[in-house]
Length: 512
View 1 (cartoon, one colour):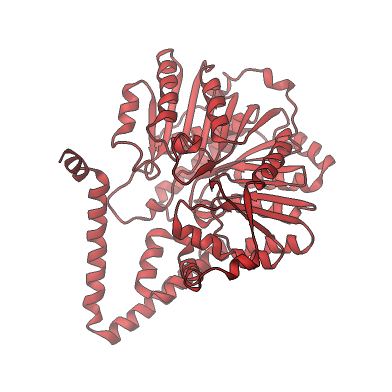
View 2 (cartoon, helix red, strand yellow):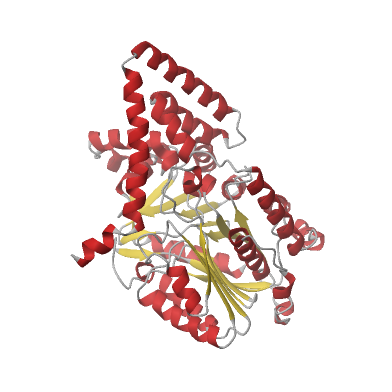
């Protein structure tokens, strides 16, 4: 009874009921108009045409537009409603001004155009310099040549490194995660955070409300505040159908004193370190940075903090606290970058496409989801047909069966065009990594799906001639030994109804 009572008052139930009522009203109106079939049909067609014209004239990626046009035309009223609530990123004028100010402040805090670093990079490799310049021009985050990186091939190793560095904090600790869940991993970290807060360290936490909806109790941010930890919740769930529900903070960032930073696919929950088993063995990755490049992660966090809280903080007060030791670091080029859904520039996708299109020998990819557009398919297959060794590892066991069906529905066209696809047989692979030609690498939070590429706040680290690139390749080759290659013969053995389900679900790919 206590469980039922607690659940009854839980905001999930309240939100579900509120949204269900709103949907019921929409459906009731549609049924009512259905009595006047000619009027209803004509009105539906007219609304769909208007919606298609609206989508065509938006500034979003053309393939993303096409992905929405199909369900809008197939399901006139419902398709339009779904697009209105889940397809756009419309901001009020106030929010647009706020985002512009944050963007200007980010650019100012990151400093002037890094011409010396880019000139040095250009002298070594013009393609690399062009990729780096794109990231700077469209996300504002510059490349650095005084940073060392350590590639972390598992959640267990990242967890150990993170605890080590958190214990060394003297000035500030910033954590920004899509998922935080009570359990061994988070409780161990929280113990350190509470201790550091008592010592006077500025400890701040950002978590995504939807990501933590079933992971943390309601009002958990207030619980952290009582412990001396400042906490902000990104995009709190409200019981209204709204496009804002669509945009989530999918980043995973940890910063210690602006000198040490972490990012990658690993959230703060026990399955990420295999303390509990959900979908077999959980394979994930992260990267630890030490040096100048951590300032980009710091600005990334502070920009989000300012955006959520509606404050205007002086970022330079945090830069003054960074130690000078990094001046002697030299580990190739490191460029953290951010992507957000509100600027109509798919930075994450372009970074991935640049790596694929510029690869000469090989490109190895790990991703939990493979819900890709025709542009990405063309890039992967064109590279493979030109002789580039293109390999992709996806999970064998799915965390979401319907997403896995769509992932598998892309195998055929890739394999027929010489792309090698593998599934991680021990369980679920959640890492998002690209490594190419023993020179380039990307580690981050960006999945190969519509939500990551177009709708979420994401981040990653672009690497060139860094020692981590070699480690990434070694990890990929090691992981490959635990994978099964998918062949055309395997695809012929798939049941017809599974193929049909996958084909049907691709219509709804933008929602996944």
